[in-house]
Length: 263
Image (cartoon, rainbow, N blue to C red; front, side, top):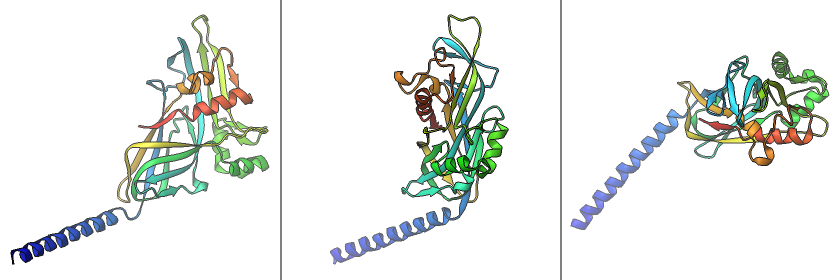
């Protein structure tokens, strides 16, 4: 008799636990229904300092660097939630020009399914389809053409925007005067640059239909010059102008891929 009572109590307890679990699951599903907007902000820095155009001298390899212009294209955003499911931003709405001089560093991804996202991916530059559109007819780029022209970040002769543009002045310890540098990366001739950057979130990016959500991505511009290793280090004294240089341009692009992290 004692055994039957104990068994019955255990069974009842099990039903209560299952009922509570089902209620919690139902509540969670209800909470995560709908769509929300995710604001994505790029926080451009130089080492441990906030990037300031024209007004700040940054220490670099015992020399000085002053940044005058910074612009780059981030595209084709993908969000991965804690279940491993992906949300792919519609391509037509997913090409963004980051431009520090005009303070254009914040964008919105709209109609994102509510969820808890733990990873973010985006392309650095233009994918092959969009790149070919521009080569065929520059007007096929639509709003992206207008944006890049506004920021003077278009290679008119190539029919495509620059992927990344960093310009300014530098001075080595041995020099008294600043000299100009110009670092441009783009697609031209047989050179095509398009790689995916994948970032892990330090905490879940919660997107809901009843509140605004945001994620902040730090971009350390100093790493574009210092490089991912010794072989990728850009010596501005030796290479102050990089535009269509195949070797140095590829090195610079590979450096760009390493500058991002979610704050």
